[in-house]
Length: 287
Image 1: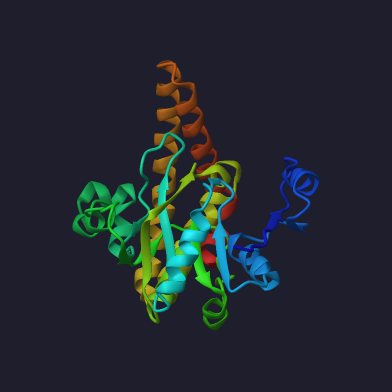
Image 2 (image 1 turned 45 degrees about the horizontal axis):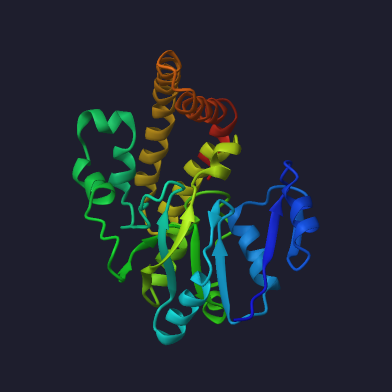
């Protein structure tokens, strides 16, 4: 199978772009002077691609030999399918949640401390987070995790590509929503890739703000009412200080227990929440 590899570097500062340029001369490298966001970077790559299929792959993944050709074979033999995605495993080999139902407004509200304590929308949240995940069966799904998605190029163009109103978070929800209006989105566990997860999120101090704003965009673009969006914004705004205190307490406790790696994860999340409260609230409310 012939393929081309296009890497879009969103103004990284760790030398990754230079490494790609130096060690992989066959890769087409696009260097952005600023972080243009996940959706826009994907569209940049898609605009340069020449093949019949587009495979969107996160930077925190490992693709085993033959995986891509098997996904292409599935899409070629099932032309009715819109997008196909593989089973995901973490770095330790554990199966990750690779697909989910679409989150409702109630499910997103129940994620906040304010609603979780009252028990409101608990059933909606449980339907979203704790439904039966069948890791073995090929099946149509509502949402594939955006770490690895294969789509035909002509269908992608008909859809209009990734929605660039999203910066980082929620774009995979919205894309699957649009695709499912026309053709099935399919989970295909006969192909597996390793997805280390949250590599970019943990390094991006603006991730918390972008993810929250992305969920607002997702709700708006999938028909949520203005009242519902206002409730979500209020809940997230009031919840953030509570989450911040909780993460700092968690960080301290984990340090006392000698769990340095876990403590560092809590610290990074707390930093993101602090930045959201001090610098991100205006852009969140404008979303």
